[in-house]
Image (cartoon, rainbow, N blue to C red; front, side, top):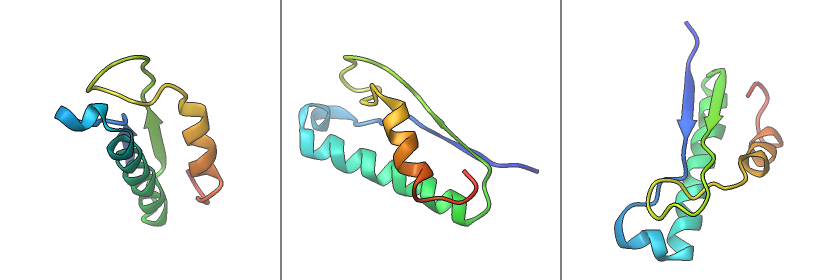
Length: 75
């Protein structure tokens, strides 16, 4: 069986307008990808959305993918 994780950059409620909270949320999700790799998960999917208030703050997933790729072995 193979496992994967979908990361969307979700920042709920009033924190959606707080840059520090959005950054913290993104970094936590990227850490989840790194931990998934350490537990032999195979995939990470990233959402891509632009100008959405609360749903996703990830407008350039290829940048996040590079960050994860530099810190993982299998993902």
